[in-house]
Image 1 (cartoon, rainbow, N blue to C red):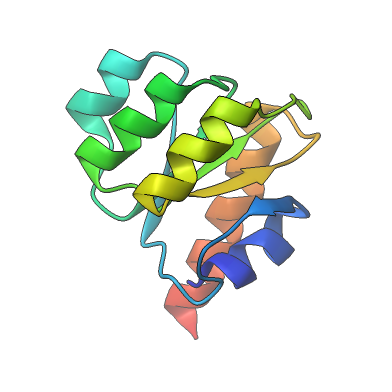
Image 2 (image 1 turned 135 degrees about the vertical axis):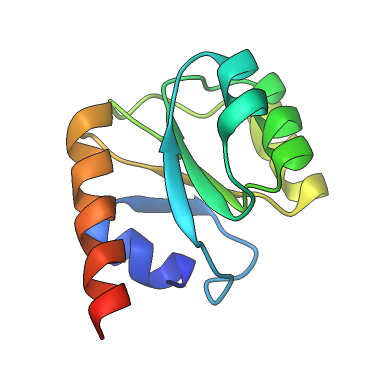
Length: 114
């Protein structure tokens, strides 16, 4: 699914998206960056509360095209700058991790059936 479709599916906010047509092939939810490095599949959007530059670095390592920050947390300027340099999209939602994951999971499942 495209990032544009994903944003609509989760009711999120596109804080900084270099390409709305970039593809997301899945999602991974974790707040432990070592877990993300070990298990996040290439092409998956990371759903997390971790709003700092290390999150961008980890997403670059694992090939995640976007970070969805939950609970409406602010996204600091240094994180925005790092994401812009790396071409990582930054999204935000007021949902918690569970509900954001559920919405994206449903949208991904619906896309597979289409």
